[in-house]
Image (cartoon, rainbow, N blue to C red; front, side, top):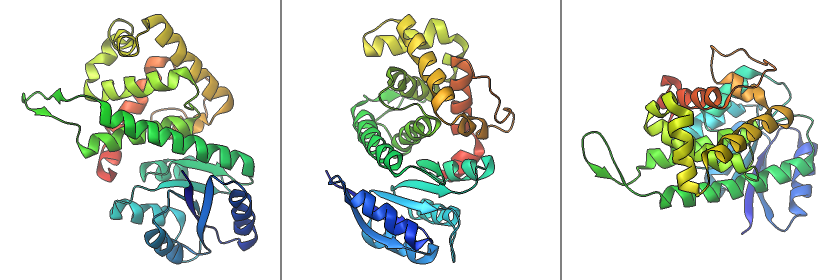
Length: 269
């Protein structure tokens, strides 16, 4: 599968540099470049790429405005945001508008390529998982298949884990994705993480609760050492930003689920 990419970057030299690097990989095809936000949005609409790489600061229409437009247009495009300034406010805005990944300039082109491949792999896995989950009953007693909104929620959860630094190769990643989805459907599971949530995750993955607990803890520890914990802290106004202490498993799960249940996210979803 060739990944089709659109680049929106006002620095023409940087845009050409990114394009040349990605084009050297047979898995990527750069289908268009734009140097302002207005023509960039039109390019996305015309080319329908798999990934759009978008700078935050653009003439005519900035990166956040492009994300807002894509949200309104219901265009399910993976978006990589480039920014020269590390800002929790921009990070939160971009994530709430569906950004898949945020990279701080200057960045390593090799890392950009790796993250793109990881994210596309993660996206395909999430879509497969969403279509394979069986029907479930709501309180009204109606049997329903998974709604589009629920599939979108799973994609967003996977994207957020990825952005924080919990990548698919970490065993705890699949346990967290499954557990977040379960808690999103039944918040009472948070009242018994050890006695209820871990056993349910373990049962679904044919393992034991202790392994689930350790794998999730290891994933969070890895993200705090090598990922971007500021993304986690940007999700909740009540959570201290840039606090060096990593959250417990239950704190981490609770914060993410509360974010996806928040009016800000639900309004944009």
